[in-house]
Structure formats: C-alpha cells, structure tokens
Image (cartoon, rainbow, N blue to C red; front, side, top):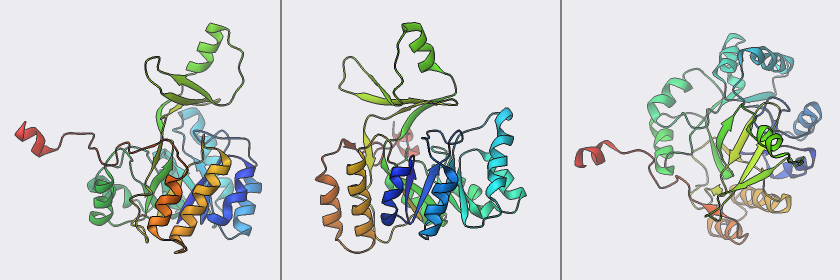
Length: 288
C-alpha cells in the first residue's frame, strides 16, 4: 500500500495516487502544518482511502493524557488508524483492545528480526523498520519475522530531534526576525543545507538529501506500507513522484520506466544506509 504524509489541505489533491495517508496532527506529530483533522479524515474516508492520524511525538508525562484523549475521540470510528512512536500510546491501544489500529514506528529502533518478533507480538497493525540498516537487512527481517511492516521509501529523514527550543534561543540571542516555517543551516566548508523546523513542541533537523528506494522496490513489495514524505519537496515534483509509484504498483509501467521517471527529476538523492552497515558485524570484529 502506498501511504503519504499530509501536512496541509492542498496535499489532499494527490489522494488518487494513494491507498491511504498519514494526516500529521497539529500539536501531536513531530512536524505538522495547519490542517483541519476532521475535514481531512472525511475526505480520505469518502474516497475509500485509509485515514491515519499522525501522532509520532514522544510525549512528556504532562502531555501523554492529552494525546490519549485525541485517540479516544476517534476510537469509535473503526476506519481510523493511528501512527505513533510513543510506547505509551501502544499500551493504551492494548488496554482499549484496539491495538490492531495502531502503526508503531520507533524510527530507528527496529533493526533486527528478534526485536521485530517481540514488538509485532503486541498485535499492532504494522511495525516501522529502521532506515539505518541496509535494505538487505530490512528484507531479512520481513523473511525471518513475517509481519505487516511500514517502510520509509522516499523523502528527507529526520537526523536530530529535540524538545529544547534551540532555534528560538538562537534567534533571540542574535536578534533575528524571521517567521519562516522552514529554515536551513549550512556547514561552512561543505555544500550542505539542512532543513530545520521548530514548533511548539519539537525542534527537528532533517538530512540535506532525499533517500529513495525506487531502484530496489519489488512489485509486489515485501512491505505492507510504503511510506513517502512530502516535507521540503516542491509540490509539483512530489505529485510526479506519487504518480510514478502509483503507476508502477498498479502495473501500468515497468520497473525500468519507474526508475527512469524518478531519475529524470534530477533530485538530490543519496543512498544513506541502504547498502552500508552502520555497525561492525561479528565476523569483522573477529577478523579485525
């Protein structure tokens, strides 16, 4: 299933290319825009699309009950799902006997099939896999621990997240008057520009490049949900991306055409950790 982020109402124009969408809930998603949650949910459900409320912050003790109240508000509608990263919300789903409507994505934590077996045993709808392991290792998890997996396949990934208002403090210190929602920080000796977003609850710094798995994905996919994120990508480009995914997984174009369509957009795509292990393997240590 092709799943996309929804940060604003305009992005709902792309839902014909989607099986469902994660509506980034204001004040509860790590990164969110100004969107009417109820309106977006109704639009998706009226088009027979999967409606998922994005609530992927890690909540403080003071705010966890607020997040739970949002979930409880929508529990009666069995067609609504929840995308979360806080294990406390998973526990709430278990207590309410609605855990099968939760997608749990810890972002970087699920890196091997033993962990996947443990977390999938909770009974959630799907489990997010880390993008900081190789694609080969991600496929191994799907084989050794069969389950519904959620996999980030296109977009810019968060590389740093904090609840400290670092940007606000810096702007105050430097007396900077800038209300742009997205700012960029650069390394003086490198040609890198990292998107930075601060809201009431989080500061997030994203990688300066797009990761994309278009060269690797099989049809049908080994993953239940293929997730694409629109953050910091021009809307007209993102629509072309979604259409290419839709066409490929609807068997309207070949894999070669799919790869060419993405490549022709000349995006700043890098492999990240797709083919590069981030830890030493046991054999490498022994052979030192």
